[in-house]
Image 1 (spheres, one colour):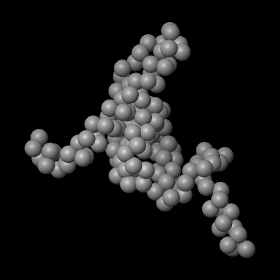
Image 2 (cartoon, rainbow, N blue to C red; image 1 turned 60 degrees about the vertical axis):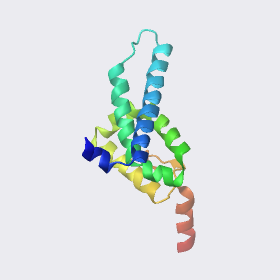
Image 3 (cartoon, helix red, strand yellow; image 1 turned 120 degrees about the horizontal axis):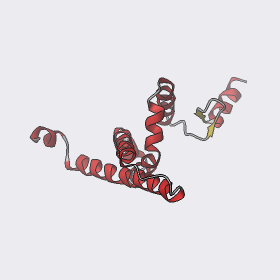
Image 4 (cartoon, helix red, strand yellow; image 1 turned 45 degrees about the horizontal axis):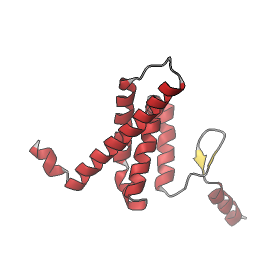
Length: 138
């Protein structure tokens, strides 16, 4: 246990706790809303836990990028939003096609090709950059 605490700084531990808590709130609120909209459906704690784990791991892996470019408010917002979609994200990441789709999206985000529009294949692109490339080649 001491080895883990020595590897992680206090900031990292607080970030992990924040990410897990906010992701849990997002996962819980989504499942609670499902129950409110459909009284026949029961609250599924397993789905909430899986969603929280998926969201927490996803957001923690990008937390340095998010904090650097957006700030701590962006970390809270993205943790909540990924908590909301965590179980669907887990379903998409369970297929190889879904993994490649998310890798493509992550590469575009880290290259600062901002997500603006979804094309026919479901891949998000930035049409302005493509138009600039066409004008430069003319």
